[in-house]
Image: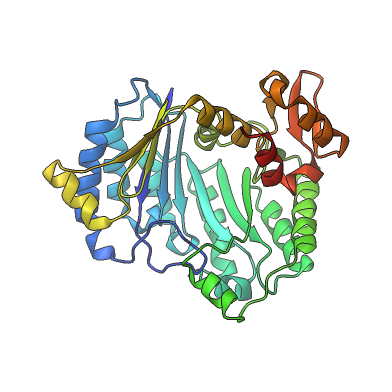
Length: 361
């Protein structure tokens, strides 16, 4: 079964670390959604399989009125969908809005909290505060959502280990089912990177970042969360179905400006340009770039994506790299499971990119 991703590029305010395609031109939401619905109608059967998962990401999908969410899901057709996720900014949460999107068919929320510390939220340009974040989760639960994920960021400038531990404990106190966590990345072209390069911010050292990650992993596993992917933790049975499709080569259709699709062995993507996307859909002239993955590409992706997950990769896939595997296991960066899988150890997760580079061909 396939998945479908829907990109909603609108934001009321751009976060200072974000490099995803987005725009603050909220006045263009209606014409964008009309183009989006047209693309969905044209492409929803492209995978030749029932739609199993739906993911509305951005940008900020919660900048759309609830009736737009209803129209999008109605156009997709969600009879077979087991998981329908929508990203939500805490600043957009109201009881009425949450009830409306739940009634529309959204059954999983991904709430972009990032931190429960007001000073850190201000530093990275988030438009909500800690109380709004907590209240958003509680309102969502009252609205009937029982599958809630939140995002948290660590290794933020000025963030202390105590700040991070308190964020973890606050998250756990909310009785949510899933947590996605990321070390801050300074992406090219973002305001955070400009400030770092100007000497206005201080980079968190690698040892501190690793210690924050280890603290997170240990505490969440103590609380019963499964560490099923390098950045993702879930209570048993609440692993993200849609995101997992990215890691196991399940086909997915990406709709909206800048969205990527994967219909093996072809990967394609829409232009990251609002005007080009809307005009292209309206006039039937949209050009998607694409690439056909070679056997070598597919092999390297299996290595890269597989080692990010707790399932790891089959040892037989690495038969040509046996000496490298032995060296990495001897260094306690990789481990062999009883069922013949190779997985990254906790120590190995700190240097996962370097491990992957050694195993690629």
